[in-house]
Image (cartoon, rainbow, N blue to C red):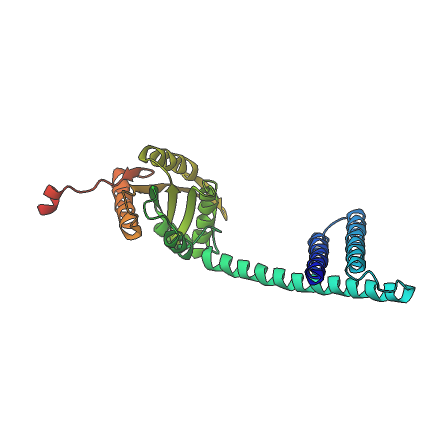
Length: 275
């Protein structure tokens, strides 16, 4: 029974040290860039947190070993040990948080397009790999009209600026958990909308066309750019390759209708296939 009590008190003491270290570290992370008054306030709070942590550990130490002599020297030594423990845990937490931040940064570099800030093809593959088997999905394949001629005539730098501007427009349609936007290469973008009906997908396409079809002023060049959008819907089991192919076919159908149009993929009947 005594061993259990000592173990519980030791665990509580460690938890107090971890909590004090983590809280202090989080406050110190927001230290840079603050005014002198705010920095002084943060410093005071960190001192109070660590003081409370040391005091709490000291109280638990007294409960754990009630017969220990409470001389001034012993009190100083025990307080120093508790302070060193908190400092060590702060260092350990900072290293862990740094490793996690570096991991998140590498993940962002792997999944995000450097030019537009949108998710890239790797990000889209990650979505498909974690997509539910029978998820109701609308796929919108977006292609910019006249982009190749603009890129060839004015240079890749202007083309990149145009892609960056269009990417910023498309990013406004992102919705966490429902709509995911990807740049999969060149001037091709894909939007995957979860739990969307065909009517909602068409309404989204209209809004995208209205938002992206405009004049872009890029390095003294006034460029009017529109897009063509192909739409397809999942039916039953999600097949990424079929959906992307159908959306791509629908996009080329939209181009044939004229600039700034969208088209919904219509499956070819068995009778037509036989012909």
